[in-house]
Length: 312
Length: 258
Image (cartoon, rainbow over all chains, first blue to last red; front, side, top):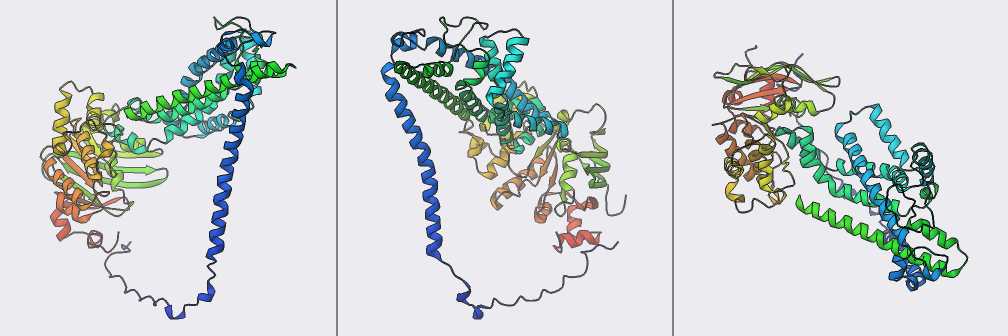
């Protein structure tokens, strides 16, 4: 076969005809700059309004809760047990219950979720099996939380005989947030450029060394953010925990993993269901406690993320 | 071996024997045989997609990392087939270093970039000295000696690429593979890299892939021209550029295609 492009010189290109400037016809264009600028302004306003709606609703919500609940919020509210008398009722067991359950949930869901994400991104072969797993995880992230409650009731409370306990609740919530943590961690790991991995491999690093020194540290801020967001979802859940046995009236603080428990959202739910207005005030106060808990968690996440980002 | 593919004199450091690489069903490299002598600079040239980078990556088994890539034939380093049984790719990559097209420093300090490879490979000597020596070899020491703890990402592109070279040298390789190391750099930074390559061949065998024919002519002792996965011509650089044996080589180096 003769080499196609060798030897013979390239044929001279025909000079392209000049742009027919002389034939310019402005009437073919209708720039309508004013109309286009107006459309631009309209969208600008639409987007700003969308943001404003969200901010306003949130502000009203917070204002409303604070107005209703601030009166009931005092040191006694945080340290008292629930009571039939609104004046003596407190949120202590619910708050401690929430902290116990969340701590355990995080301890279980974090390692499992991050481990799964690392396996899927760094180890798993790119085949149908892996794709089926990933698709199922994505689907699980969309399953309503009450379904996880049913699962927790059947598996942890009954089959594993954990009873209506903190450990059963934490396991249920861990399952609930596991898909969220996996997916968000995968995104964080995917965002680490391939060139970093190649650079490490080219120096004779093993796969684990590449992950340990480069992929994981760079993905960590994203993973932490994902984890805290997932926990923020877990802290507000009442439905699945009602199914695994969160009780509104717990008269002692949790001491063991197998203890009965309640959590703040369940306590709020119970108080709101009471007919007396004084209990509604307590519910609002408990909502403030829940908000503060959430904000604290987010603050911790931001501090951790900044610390790790600086280290790199 | 045909007349247009020479057997270089001197000790042979790297050799490909009937080497092919397949990506799925596509044969990106077709039965290439080439010998690369010790402590010389060899340039691979050819149009995009000709297989020069693929060939380069066979010599440190980076193709292992490409999903679906399959290597046939032998890539021999100091008499040993790199694709033989019991050869550990991790060990190969320590002894045969690589510098990439785009500078890819780790988002860590300059010091940590250089020390990383040595650390994981169990370097027992004085790490500070090794970092200094490596940066000096890469002609970067004077520019960064006062800020070893600052981020490597704060360096200019050319400095980053020299850092990547220093990083590769710190694990004391015997061969340095360079995949278009200057293509993302400005002319001044490019010249520094080229000067560096000239110095490095005192101690290392250097194989460089380049799109830039002037660069191949300036830095290399031998040049290989690849086209569509085949090795078309391999010879002394000066001869390749003044009097190529193959018509296809001449067409390419005179700029009629590619």
